[in-house]
Image (cartoon, rainbow, N blue to C red; front, side, top):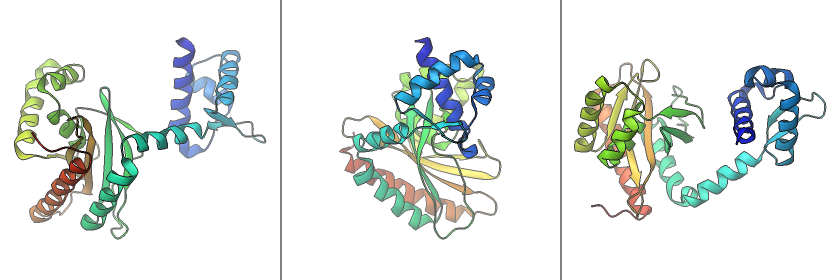
Length: 246
């Protein structure tokens, strides 16, 4: 178990440093808080499994392609390519804003897709693969509001102080009533997000789709238009996944 935990720590560090391309073993040792001798053994095993790669010239390490392969397989299992992505692309064209797909992962969600507008030069940019606590942002609150109330409460209790629970639960009640979630500046100042959850034929929450936009000087009329398009898209995706309503 300890070996697995250390391997995942290494993978997460390399993923967080993706923009730097690669790291040396000494940099990994410092960031992972592992002795060089221990780290070397783990890296050797991870290379064998394709989890990481080592550059022959620089001797630095980067993530292996196995993560992408597994991710693509996950896309197939959730009917992503054939049923979800075309709708995300359609929505991005209609609203001319960035569109996201988030998937629940324990107490967090993970952004697994982003479709950027090809016509709007002002974009909200959230990196793929980042984890966001379930109590933050429109997408996550849309997911919480769709869960059974007892399940949502169990998650909330692990994320926020007891005295803040009633306020968040009131927000979730409002989301259930109106059919969508909206947030302003919860992660990035000056930005807003609107989201709806998507559900499959087994009444399971697949995730949430959201529109992220710069909130400066955005009219209420435009926000309403974004919301209408998003809600329509969410319903179409859920129906494609077999959901027929309660």
